[in-house]
Length: 515
Image (cartoon, rainbow, N blue to C red; front, side, top):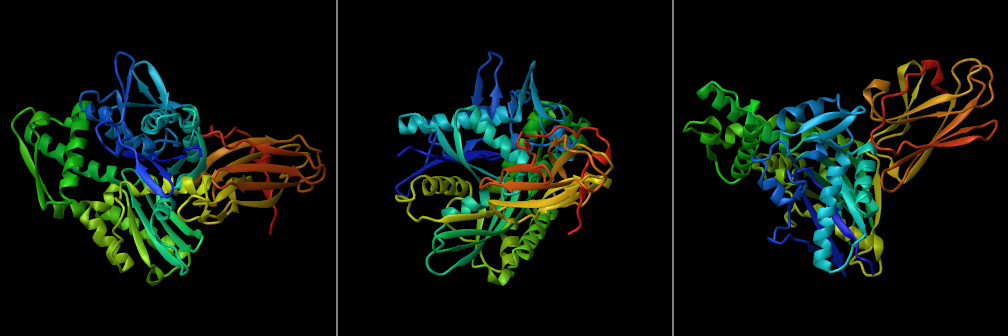
């Protein structure tokens, strides 16, 4: 039986695991660490460090060490999220044809390359553990990742020779690792608050099946934001004491983030924590942070999480009283204020069990065995997932028509009928978007292709059937067909971050046919 890795490719940390005969092994590095920082450092001699060794030199190599790259994958350079990341990080973020790349020295690296380096490191750890090569994996992503981000993750695996058998949503993998099931069905909520992203999924687990009822989230909400709040507070204290803003220096800025993360973790155990800022201030200086102030500062973020939880329940047609269990995922769920908020919202204490940092990797490995060798898996389950965001097609007038609604079960395929918008039009520009806005500008562009030429006719006489298909990985394919001639074309929207739309006339866009 070929080994299939379960990989949790996280924002802050990653996990690689293997499940054989129902037994999961979390694969450690040479130091025995089972949690591997998602960090990559480029050294002056051309060598590359990944994992704990890369993370350890962050303060010494702020402009050459990449952390939290997952927050940038699949995003446009002009986005608010990228602007915020530029302010926090020491490495240089540059425009790559509208997308994002990282410039280290004279070299430019794509986000996929950074993810690929982490995946290669995890694969090598696994091969050293197993004793032979590994070429297959299941990789997890946030449930609210769009098609651009999922495609980029798949390509990162392919870049290091991994055949990615399935892209699985992180909350779904977490649910897979828990012992729900049996003859009675259970409805559970998975609350996943990691370093860079937040996801919530409502699932129903029964004998032989795991069905996702709804999912929601925010791909730019997590522990990194909490660190940023503390780091800004520390920077303001230093500036007030010395008259110098340490955030203007790359090394000092990252030292502040490291101290902030340390304080965040300590405040989960202690009521207050004292930090020595002498190395940043340049003079002897100490300050303290107390838990109450920290919790007050992060309350808006926690409230945002709970709002998304309520939305997921509403869309899954599930009342909070019908939730039988709550699973916590991600290191940020260790924060007492987060746990209290989750307990109040769901009216029950979260389940204790697998480490919140490991649960996704464990679930990915279990799902990999379930997928690859159902006869030896501990419990064979059919996975029924949903698409997190609506898929849309741009039409004349700046509108965006929904073809597949969010939280639709996948795999799925839906078709809609469109027509030409002007006389003698012999081609249409098909712009595919993901999002919940009826206006084109409010959604994320996945891709665009031109369909045609076809026979010219008066406006509205040429009918074009557009089919959107989503596979089990949540990846998208679009097909256009001229009903009169049967001529068809498949759109390549799975090319990662799409370019800016071709500046064609609005009349070249299709017109929606009223249903």
